[in-house]
Amino acid sequence: MKNILKTIWNVLKYMLIHVGLQIIYFIPVSFIVGIRLGIQGVENFEDQYAEAIAKHIPISLIFAGVGALLIYRWMLNRKGISFSKACRFNKLSLDKIVVSLMAGMSCLYVSAAIISFFSESKVDSHVENMASLEQGGMLLFFITVGIMAPIIEEVIFRGLIFDELRGKVGMFAVIIIQAFLFGLYHLNIVQGTYAFVLGIFLGLSLLWTGSIWAPILIHAGNNILSVGVTILPFGHYFEHGAVMLFALFIVFPFSVWYLYKNRVGTVKFEEESLRG
Image (cartoon, rainbow, N blue to C red; front, side, top):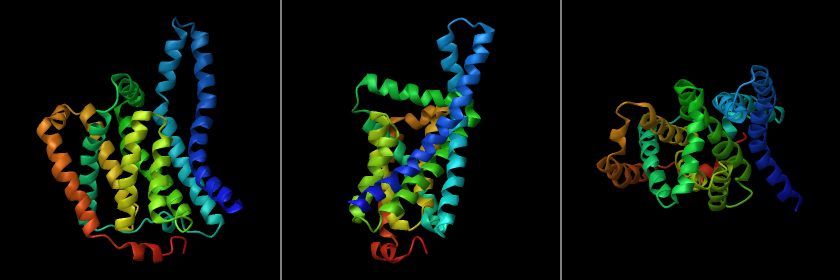
């Protein structure tokens, strides 16, 4: 029982550190914004306050992401553990880099298919949450969603949590648990559902390639295309029915097949020491 509780804590602490840093950022920011708006005597204080705070969301995520990575590295170094080995920052071949990006972009359409099963009200709530990330400007939006989120979330779930669970439960359970936590972490039923499905594939991509760069690139490909559809003048072409069908039934299946066919092997993955 003691070992189970220790494992649960070791898993949750990585998530809590990232969330905690976001809270730490917003404590002084919310206080300063409130005082500034109060001094200015603005009308519709609540709306103005919410809008001002929303502009800080991308910055808070970048702050929390960078801060968490530094803390994780420090925590592992204290135990004599290599951060890069624990997270499996192993070299990825060029073909798998390309296929991972292709897989990630096609995953956007898998997510869209999953979203289509939800009610309009739940989808609207999800869209509002995503729109809040755009308040800080498109550059910060791209950095946050396209770069920082894939790196920090993959380090947390496919890196540290995956490593913590490996050896304590079966590999099937590791894949499901890290995907479930990944979905739960998004705190939104719509995003959480497709994040769970995506999390399974991301976990498998780590298992098949032996490198966290695969899930990072898949995650980044998904997010960057999502940003592109939003901000590029020709973004609407990505929403064309033929493009969606091609991505869903050609690109995604091919990517999964290719990564699986060229996998490093579960036995090799299990035998390698992540904390060596």
